[in-house]
Image 1 (tube, rainbow, N blue to C red):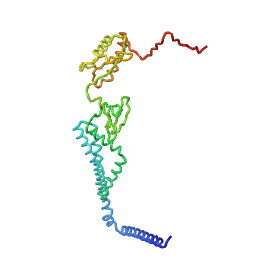
Image 2: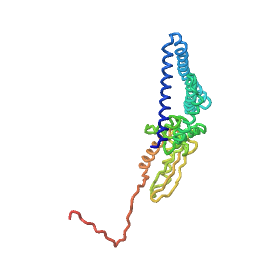
Image 3: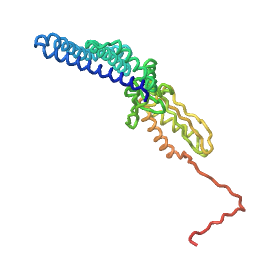
Image 4: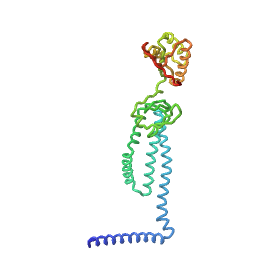
Length: 313
C-alpha cells in the first residue's frame, strides 16, 4: 500500500472518529438538558407539545377512518340510486373508502410534522413501481371499470363469459364471482371477461328452446309432427306467441331431423326442456315412431365366405 493511500485512510478514520464523538456529545447534551429540567419545564417543552401532536394525529386517524367509511357508503348509495346496480354500488364504495383513507393517513402524518409532500412523491413513485409489477391486476381493474360503464350484466343474471357459465354473485375490483348451476363458486378475472364475448341469458324475458328429434325414414313425418304439436299445445308453460316452430330441418344419413323450437319464460327454460324431451319420447313409443340409433350395416358379395375359427377347438 502506498504512503498516499495510508494517509487517506488515516484521514477518513479521523473524520469518522470526530463525527462519532460529535454524535455522542450531542446525545449527552440532550440527555443532560432533559435530566436537568424540572417537571413543569419538561411538561411544557416536551410532553405537552409532542404528546398533543401524537394524540391529535391518533384522533384524526380514528375519526377520519370512521368518516371515510360513512362517506364511502353514502357515495355507494348514491351510485345505486342512480343506476340500481349493486355491483356499481360495491365498486364505488370500495374505491371511495380507499382514497379517503389515504387522505386521512396523510393528514395524520402531517400532524406529526412529517413532510407530506415527500410522502406523496414517495407514494407516487411506489405506485408507478407497483403498477409496472402488477400490469395484469391493473388490466383487470380497468376492465372492471369498463364493465361497470357498459353494464352488460347485473347481479343475479345468468351469463356465459370466458367460457364459464353461472349466476353473477358480485364483481370486485379485480375478479368477477360466478355461481355455477352445480353450486360452485368461480372467480374470473375481469380482464378475461371483458376481452371475450359475454352472453347474458337473463337479459330478455323469454327464451327459445332449440330441440332436434330424429325419426327413422320408415316413420311417418306427419304423425311425428302432430305428436310434437300436441305436446307443446298441452304444456301451459309453452308460450303461444311467438308460435313454436316444428319443421323438417335436415335429412341426415340415418334419420329425418325434426327441428322443434318453442318459446318459454326465461326462468322456466331448463324445466320445460326436460319435460318436453321426456314426453316426446314416451308419445313416440306409443305411436310407433322409432328413433334411430347409430348402427353399421355390412353388405358383402354372395360368393364371399367368412371363416369363423373355433377358439375351443
